[in-house]
Image (cartoon, rainbow, N blue to C red; front, side, top):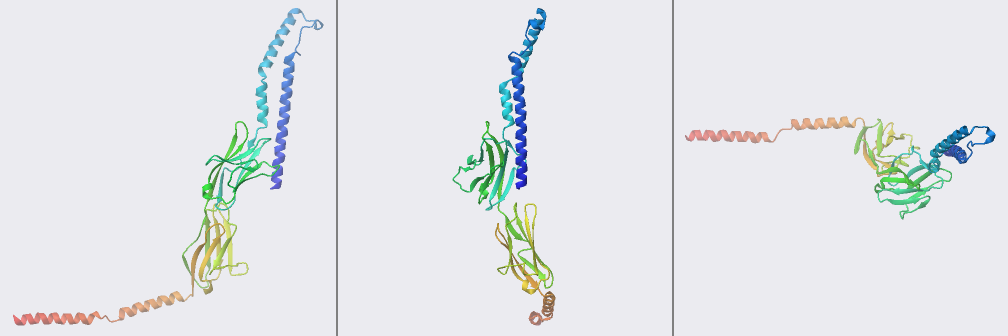
Length: 335
């Protein structure tokens, strides 16, 4: 960073000296033109040996030339031009869209070349409130402050503990006439964590246990992501059976916990705990390899027993059938 800053500073100094040389050249040109127009033109002189007619012609030409020179030189316009050579210029490579995580310090960077004696201010467009002027803070909200290192062209607005309400448009202004500004949009987001396949995961003993925690949106990676098992932090550096990997993607952070060969002791509640959001949890069940088959056999046997068990409704149906036949036969006998 220091090397880049030194190169940028040397480049800025070279640009300033180039403009100084151009300005001096322009001033010399103006002085020469003014000197010629003031009376160093050819005049009639007997020593020149020119006839009176030619002297008059030369005088006319001098008058015309002087008029043309005077017509082309405008001191005010040259002054404006010289001033424009040293006007402050914003660095267009600075990002105009900045994302920050709620609660994590945000920085809005503004780079100004050829600042000279001008002053840099930060304005919040939401309420047109002046936040900082130079290195001084002009707001009662002490979360805002200006950062500037002497000898650099960077003026940074720092926002500590930002919230979603701080999202919006901010302007870096330079005290030129008219005022020049550079607009930057701040977007403060609230990340969330989730574990894939939650809330429960089943696996066999001896198989791989893979838990993936996704934190998004995550413009900046969390300071840390801890994994918990049964309420205790997993120390994957001392536990050789556990591996943890963290990857940063486009606006997301992914942490993966891998157990190559799961045992019954790996059952229980797991939690993913990033530094910038609430925890996410999942319940893991590790079964012995024969347990599912045994459960299936037991279920099948129970079903068979249920099918073979005699129904208590059969005798009752037989009794009703005999009573019906007896009732019909009795009516036929009476008739």
